[in-house]
Structures are given as C-alpha cells and as structure tokens.
Image 1 (cartoon, rainbow, N blue to C red):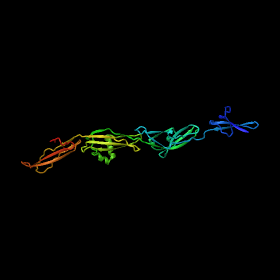
Image 2: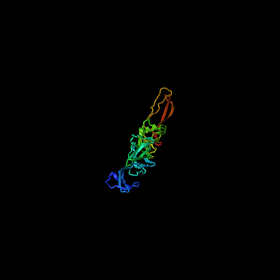
Image 3: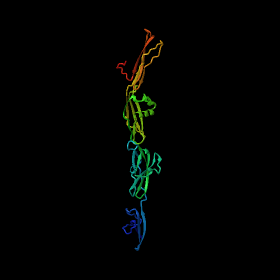
Length: 342
C-alpha cells in the first residue's frame, strides 16, 4: 500500500490542510507552533483506503543564544556636589548580538558581584531589569549577568565584567579674600605660620579655617578631601599677606585645578602707650635704682628702649646729679626720615 499524510493546523480537519506528503518526505516550511492533527491515508493496490489520526505538537524548546560583550568601561557622571554621581547601564549595552532561531528576544540584566563580593539574592541589585543605575558605591569591577528570553519562555544567560570608573576631577571653592588688622588677631595667633604649619599642619589648618573660613570641595562622588598649604609673608610686625592654597582630592586620586587660594591681608595699626619716669631726688648720697621707661603694645608695634646716662659732680649741696636719656624706637613705625618726638 501507499501511505500519505495531511497536516490539519490546530486540529481543524475541516480546514485546508498542509499536504498531502509522502511519509518520510520533508514538509514545507510555515507550519506554525501549536498542536496539530496529522491524518495518514493508506491505500492498497485494490483501492481500499484506511486513515489514522495522530496529534503532534510543534514548539520551540531551544534556548536562545546569549552573547555578552567582552568588557565595558563606564564612567560615573552626574551632578557635581552632594555625591550624586550616576551612570546608566542597560541590557542593550551588555548584549553583543544575542539571538533566537524562532522569535524576537527580551534582554534583562542584574548585578551579581561588586569587586569580587557576591550580591545577596535579596538585594534589589540582584533583580533582573532593563537598566541598572550605577553609583559611586559600585566603583571598581562589577559583574553583570545578561538574561536572554525568547517568546516561548526559553532563556539563556551570560556574564561580563564592567569596569566602573570616576574620571571627573573635583572642584575647589576657596573662601573669600579677607582684610584684617594685626589687632584683630588675638595673642594666640602664631607669629610665624610657616614654622607653625610645618610643626602642626592639622592643628594650624583648623585654626586658619576657624579664623578666615574653610574651602569647599565638590565632586560627583561623596566625601572629597580638602587639604591646604600656607605661606606667611608677614614681617616681624605682623603686617603683610598670608596666602592659603587649597587642593581637593577625590577617592580616585584626581585633584582639583590649581590656583584655588585665599589672600589674607593684614594691615598695620599703631596703638601703644609709653610712660617716662619723672624727676626724682634722694637725700642720701648713695647710688640708687632709677625707674625705667614702661610701655604697652596694643597694635602692630615692636618697641625697644635704649638708655644713656650722664653723671655730674656737685656744685652746691648735692652729692651729684644723674641725667638719664631714654630713646624709644618703634620698629614698626620708624621710617628713617621723620624726626623723633622729644
């Protein structure tokens, strides 16, 4: 007998089926997925005919092919200041031409490790999604899993390492320039900041921040470090310029542009008192101690006193006379031109 077959899509034997086909011969393409009816017709040499029905299900049981990129390097961007740096990584960025033989595919990703530390399955990072937002907490090597799913629900996965970097340099905002007088600086303020800073940079920096204001460091990732150096150009009278230079460094070692500095101008002010001793006499003809000049410095003053003494022999009842000349010099006011006050 000869045997042939007809395929009725989705079991509808009232429709126009595919075929007939010789048993063992290939069928045409285009038979859809689903459960179909195959009806076999057998005819012998005398023309007798018999049929046999068989259901067959055509489906997609083959998983799609998942292909990941060899590796990605992503830079954190986002706003400067407040630690708001972000970068968006989507499944399309990770995919490298994944495909399925029968249908379109859906792509999803999740983070499985950060710098070699596995992510808990209960962590939101370990949930498949279309895109993932990378933050400064994920700087370093991030392992990403790509899941590829076809229309039949078959899926396949692949993994790749993503290098997450911060390539944005921080920004330094210096405090405003300041002009003060030497009288505004209390007695605890160092006379030589260069020496003081070399001996105690942390304590001196804190003192200058409290006195003249602190610099601000801004970066797309949180907690940049602000450091400073100082050059004290004041003279021995405490008058001149103090220059503070600031540097902001982020966690990746990038530093802020140069020339972030503050100029502190210390102006002079003269405020002092000088008391000269009055005349004195002594009825005893014995040597005696004489009062000295006393002075108080309240401003930018550096006072010294020189004393010269003349002794005169008596011409009457006195034993002798002593004339003392005091020369008082304020080095912070002296200009070599103007005459001295007498």
